[in-house]
Picture 1 (cartoon, rainbow, N blue to C red):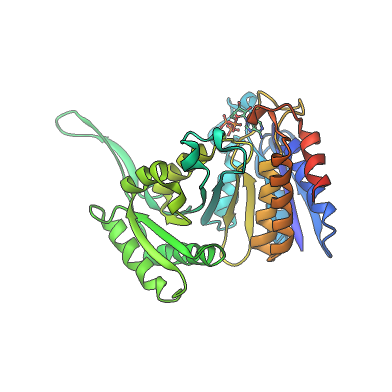
Picture 2 (picture 1 turned 30 degrees about the vertical axis):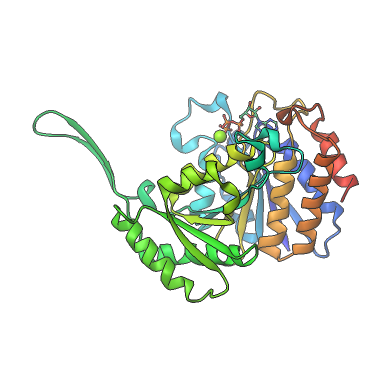
Length: 347
Ligand code: ATP
Ligand code: MG
């Protein structure tokens, strides 16, 4: 079992170090960690944000634990050399097509939510977003029409195999939770969405234990605010998932607590906190490492099937929070290392 550790820029190395301490403390037999350079850190060392040796490390591993990339001082570089390209490159090169973002409100943190406490306290959902297709990857362009008006277009498209594989990811995720899957589309007006819905229904025949519902994206946005407790797993396309997953993250509050997984076919995945490199607090030992620690838990569960170990990490984080260990993002004063220590002590 080999995990590639790409810490990256800004607070990336600080939060990743704590997640690595937690992984090592579990004493998992045969677990090997291999470090690699990404982002601005890799550019400075190798002249590229995603050097070949980093890709080789990723390909030789069973999973990637990723910190963050981003470095304002490299903004003058051409787009292909900017730190952020490392994430896009890894998604493409490793075939990461399913983005999983859990959104859970921890006990005692209901007031962080943008929602009323009686509503927000019930949030425990997972968004499964397709990552390789949709309007972002369709044909696009701009032109000037004969009458002089400028026009821009982006083609929204999905092929059935692309929908089928994300549908399977959604159903499998639902099987591991409370077995409810809500597929979000806009099938009343979009052909892409009608195909999406038809294929999801076809795939549902293979998962008779999962209760499938469908919802239009505009209604889903409303229900996420009105009644988020009704959702378990949401599966949706790239564009709708982009918007709904950011909305869900604000429904539960802090940026320092939310983990994510980007999965390929099979068990390979890349796991990272949803936050960025946070240059404003980098190098100060102030960053909350919990999102990265929870990403490591997702890694153990999805890539290695180590459910008990994953649950142990999640319980330790929840216990630390319940005991009032809070970083600056939660209005507390605990530093990065202190939070790591607190989680380790409760493991
Ligand atoms: P990037 O371009 O690298 O994605 P960003 O501008 O999107 O960065 P973040 O890096 O996510 O933004 O930071 C947004 C704000 O949240 C910053 O003020 C940052 O300090 C804070 N923040 C982000 N992550 C954490 C964390 N783990 N702990 C505490 N504060 C955080
Ligand atoms: Mg960001």
